[in-house]
Length: 255
Image 1 (cartoon, one colour):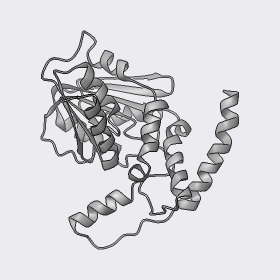
Image 2 (cartoon, rainbow, N blue to C red):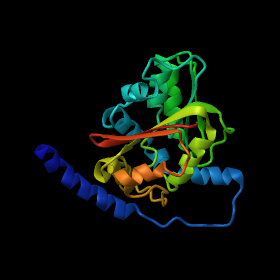
Image 3 (cartoon, rainbow, N blue to C red):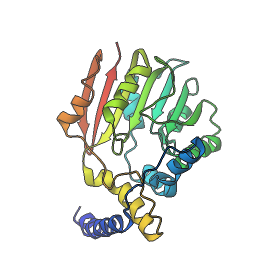
């Protein structure tokens, strides 16, 4: 870890310099047409302009929780055929494709706000010849699905940049079927959770893409008690919260 400290501290200083150099207030204007709104949403996201950085972090830096998900959600075996699963904030489709490949008799939908992240997810599914998963551009705070649509919800690192986490939990509860379960994984330490943002802001500064991106400068992380309170507002039948290294987890079941 001493070696890592010698490398990361100077890098962090460069990240912070790039963030300050690239920051610009987001301008507000009168309501635009739907096409203009979509264009602005595309242009003001770091995840669109630096999609490859987040994809790289997901592949090589983030923890792979696939086995933890499977063990927590299906301790007595795999999912039942016909299970409908949705991944919120799927990014480049890492978990959606992993689970679709392991369980080809279930249906998986990955949703994300970033079209370029979804493009990578669709390409991943195409290369693996997966026909049981699809990807849609949807805001996790306003899911387009009807009530009680899914048996399972998974979300990894969703809340690090989400402005209204309680609203996202409300939406999770709404679209879960009775007896459905959600698995949530969140980082515990702000510095490590912020590395992708630092890198994307750095690239924005180097390329002079100073569009006033909507993403924050630093990732949000929950204390243990705050993470527990996040799920307390809904009348779950059962809630299990635990920590493992740099991550904390929640497994909740709807009555």
